Length: 316
Image (cartoon, rainbow, N blue to C red; front, side, top):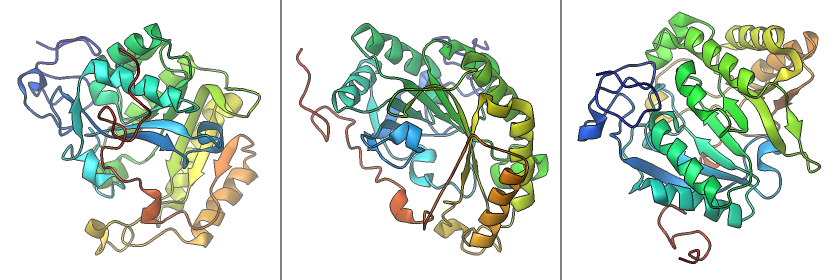
């Protein structure tokens, strides 16, 4: 049986582009590293997103464990492999959303949630029924099926996908996913279809729209330019493009001649100059020394269990 993406059935899982067929309903782990049980590693205010997402109050970031893509240089490796996190129910996840709203978060920021899509959809519906009113941000690698994303239409206000690779060969080398470029293009197309017009409130916080991120990798300025060119030509001012220089070499990449180092100022400057040359006007860039491990949050379960790092328990 191959369930429709977003359906409650999780046996023979075909939810993500990997289509690994794991019996996640029966406790088997998929390529994402997790079974059907929701695992969350952190739920707290996060100040390190784009200014229109974090603002001064912070984004209500919920970091989910597991990831279908599995990049070899992953900055969040400890949770991406599904080995860290607290197992919670759908009902608890909905409570977390409401607690973050109570903490004055600008939005609910779902970080790598696609492999839990049916449960996340259910939790959002529960939370919205109990008063969740702030925007919902879907923070994704873009390695998602477009038909799965359609299950979120009307529930997600802001899409925040990556566009990692234009080259299938590079996607295979770094993420074992040669289909990534075409999958990501289709996913972003669906995201823009759902939220085609960027909207910001009086404080400059995005309430609707799409921001596409590209993390510049050391030695891959040409690849980055191709991605920025594609996004600008395809979508123009329908989206914002966020060009990031915060690549942090993790210990597993120490011997890699490229991924073992940081992006240089010259490399990042070349990318920004190119974006200006082709008239990208709706974009974000990073200043200062962002490639520090201190910018990677502690995945210590903060805010996940009731009474652990959040506001007082809501009234029953």
